[in-house]
Image (cartoon, rainbow over all chains, first blue to last red; front, side, top):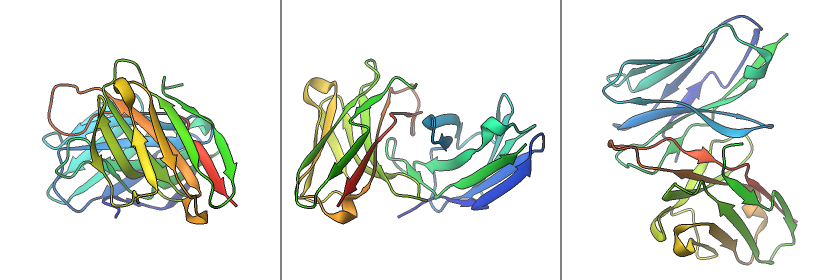
Length: 111
Length: 117
């Protein structure tokens, strides 16, 4: 069963705009991770945020975590065509190895 | 290129045949994972190794599926008597414990796309 659910399922924006994707999950977690998947490079880890962290940055990426609402958001600023991909959140529930994934948000950046 | 390789990249087989996939993780990583992914969905956990020990198997993994990781290096996933429902992308990932609790960053291979006709 899927733990995380991303929202929206699909998002299409103009290059240069910001993209925000949300993830909701059901159980308590240790960590939440975001991954990107495109046909060229497969699944690539973007960022890991621990349950005691509220916000984390990596380059043009900003991730927030609200454990009280069991939700996370991924913000990509100044989007580029190369950001076109599917974005997944993955949570570990009460496990330290098993990741449970949502169905992903498909992001399309229009030139 | 994440450093995790999988072979073959594509496999077409007839229903009822056996298939075997190989994964070579990053050499320093002691954890290895197998996932299955179907179109439009996220990966589904299948099984997990720490070194050579298989520590967890998903209920998704029927008796037709078996995985090994001899000597804690590469791993193989075998599907016996394939069914059309086995058609999917099979992903391998590896990770190394980073000293704190919870899950770790996983490095994925390119996957093996299986088509059962």
